[in-house]
Amino acid sequence: MSADPSLILDGREIPFVPGQTILQAADDAGVYIPRLCDKPGLEPFGSCRVCVVRANGRTVSSCTYPASLGMVVESETPELQAMRKVLLEMLFVEGNHFCMSCEKSGHCELQALGYRFGITAPQFEYQFPHREVDASHPDILIDHNRCILCARCVRTSRDLDGKEVFGFVGRGPHKRLAASTGSRLKDTNADVTDRAIDACPVGALLRKRVGFAVPVGQRPYDTVPIGAPEPVQEARR
Ligand code: FES
Picture 1 (tube, rainbow, N blue to C red):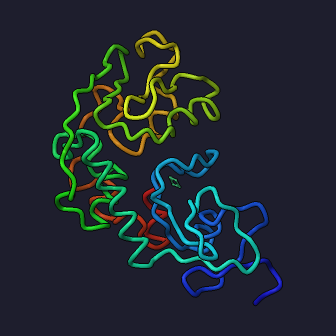
Picture 2: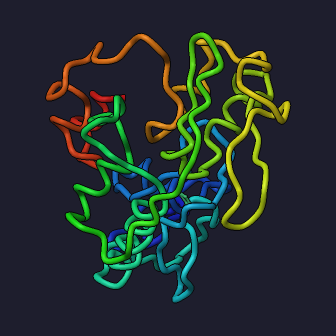
């Protein structure tokens, strides 16, 4: 081992900076671990579990679990890939994800992970929930049918936009994204320039009147799979 702190990820020694999570160390080493609720620049949230790894034999979320000296991490095992695939399939059936009619198609991280994991038809029954679309704001809409409750918009609004536009209401299966005022999006100080809108990994938060600004077929994940190695991945950020 080198003098810098390092861990072993899938048999490869990678360095880390003390305080980094496993996911951050992997990213810095150019090793992709699938994720959905994590986004660089935001506090780790640890809700989706797609970033699951085994660290010294324990199953943990790599986006929240700290890297430590000599830790042995497994990520690309058949067991862990199967767990991630099940989690993704559950997300697909829990909402209404009709990719072909979604403006986020080709930009959507859930869709891109679906392709990465070869999900053609989820093994679970579709729930087809009845959820509203909040189109009350003049420039932004929330489609609750596509929200995966990752809280990226909540954290971005709070920590990067300096606002508190979004929050959650309800518990368990009734939990949903809401305007933090408890009412409609039009009653908040949400603005079309907010970074929170771009933080959404799916098509739950969209700007109005910009559909097809990027033609289908030319969108980031139409051409470069999610998790593609650098520098190809860098080009789509
Ligand atoms: Fe780690 Fe969602 S990316 S729990």
